[in-house]
Image (tube, rainbow, N blue to C red; front, side, top):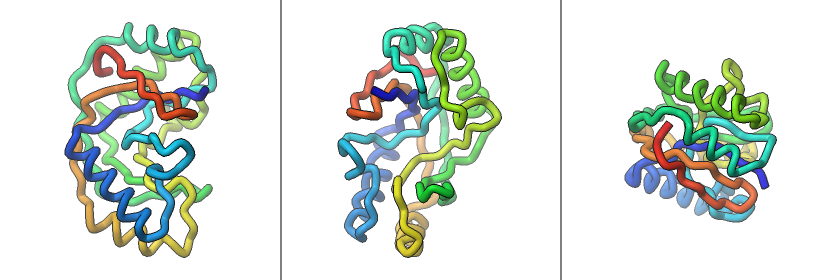
Length: 174
């Protein structure tokens, strides 16, 4: 089991991202819709964990003070050097502060956070295609820029078992 702490999108934005996944799949570009178990949800990951104690992670996050919904504004397409492509949200100070708070709480609770999610290294993103081939980039860009800009509100936080797609909602937004 691998765990990730994820911001989940409001229903309208969730539907928009799922629609984009479907358009990309129809164009022959594999997305999170068909990746691994096929149960992925549109999300922005606060932290990927290298330790896997769900109860300890949930307890650490539940101890953080409640917060309100997170406004998100997506207006760019990004890629990582290992072929993953994603929507890039505007990086606001409140978003960065929330992510740092989550990671600090997880570390204090004994979780081991993947190095790419430590404060100062985190690059917020919403994955579209986990293995994009260079020749598919024009089709992906055309589909993405037909949808952007996309405003969203992250209205839930969950611990997601990335090996199965099981979503464990937290009792409050952090």
